Amino acid sequence: MNFMGRIADILVEAGHEVVSFKQSDLPLKISVS
Image (tube, rainbow, N blue to C red; front, side, top):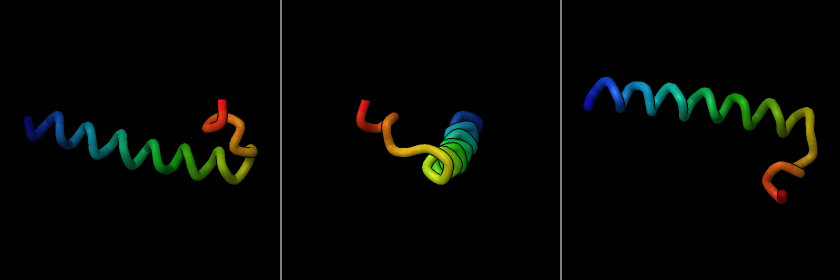
Protein backbone atom coordinates (compact mmCIF):
# COMPACT_ATOMS: atom_id res chain seq x y z
CA MET A 1 0.00 0.00 0.00
CA ASN A 2 2.71 2.47 0.99
CA PHE A 3 4.70 1.46 -2.09
CA MET A 4 1.71 2.14 -4.35
CA GLY A 5 1.19 5.49 -2.64
CA ARG A 6 4.80 6.47 -3.37
CA ILE A 7 4.37 5.49 -7.03
CA ALA A 8 1.19 7.57 -7.20
CA ASP A 9 3.01 10.58 -5.76
CA ILE A 10 5.85 10.20 -8.28
CA LEU A 11 3.39 9.94 -11.18
CA VAL A 12 1.48 13.01 -9.98
CA GLU A 13 4.65 15.09 -9.75
CA ALA A 14 5.87 13.86 -13.14
CA GLY A 15 2.45 14.62 -14.61
CA HIS A 16 2.55 18.18 -13.30
CA GLU A 17 5.99 18.68 -14.85
CA VAL A 18 4.81 17.32 -18.21
CA VAL A 19 1.67 19.47 -18.15
CA SER A 20 3.61 22.65 -17.36
CA PHE A 21 6.15 21.81 -20.09
CA LYS A 22 3.46 21.23 -22.72
CA GLN A 23 1.57 24.38 -21.68
CA SER A 24 4.72 26.44 -22.13
CA ASP A 25 5.30 25.08 -25.65
CA LEU A 26 1.86 24.19 -27.03
CA PRO A 27 -1.61 25.76 -27.03
CA LEU A 28 -4.27 24.00 -24.98
CA LYS A 29 -5.56 21.88 -27.86
CA ILE A 30 -5.07 18.67 -25.90
CA SER A 31 -7.46 19.57 -23.08
CA VAL A 32 -10.08 20.78 -25.58
CA SER A 33 -9.94 17.67 -27.75
